[in-house]
Length: 139
Image 1 (tube, rainbow, N blue to C red):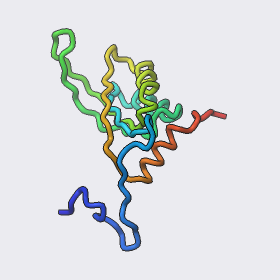
Image 2: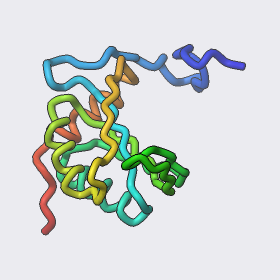
Image 3: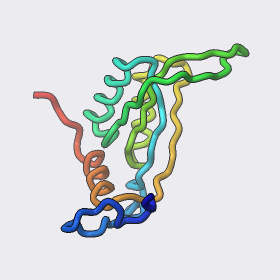
């Protein structure tokens, strides 16, 4: 079994070693992951589309539906939900959270922020470029 943090694992013969970089060059451009969910696939796709289209997120991964269990108003509840893993920067975080609350039907939507320690340099650069650019306009 290969070492999951060995940067040479899985490289072809002609590939340079992966350049890993710690997150953040400037204040506000640090990478963060936002964990959320949606009650169904259609809304999950709409949320992803809007967040990416408005340049609030570089990428939104929609996971497979799963059962969430929680207490709500002193009652044990269960609901099928689609997990969302949103990649953005700290500087876009408040606007993303505000927009997510507007789009989400839950009274208290899950919005959890996880700091990113680092990642593949080219991916981190791409991610920052996506959320730094002006919003896309439909023509």
